[in-house]
Length: 155
Image: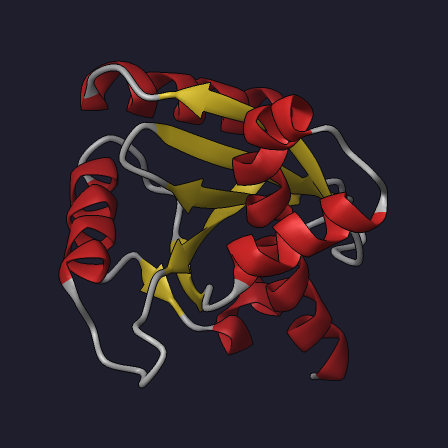
């Protein structure tokens, strides 16, 4: 898949006033986060209830165009030992399908423990169980995206 990029490729693709979009793919939802234009801070935006791939893809691409996104950062759900399981295969299939609809590149980012970190952060801020359930995927997407942004700051 030629539209999958590495973290080292991001600075050369970034142009003024463009952002990154972080995605946490679940079976029922997609968490969405967006960076600032300086690529330093990720903000949880929303949790999209999945319908059909075509509708989900159209929504994400339209949102990306509206928000001046130049690349997607998708959480890659590796197993704790680093091996790839069925969820990684599903993520790669999602990227292959999306690649047929957009020229935008995709960065696959190790998401191990992102949902756990998101849950702990929301517990620390005393977010109710109902609100946590509504926001967890978007917050997890923000953790995934923030991890990539932090790595960019080190380069």
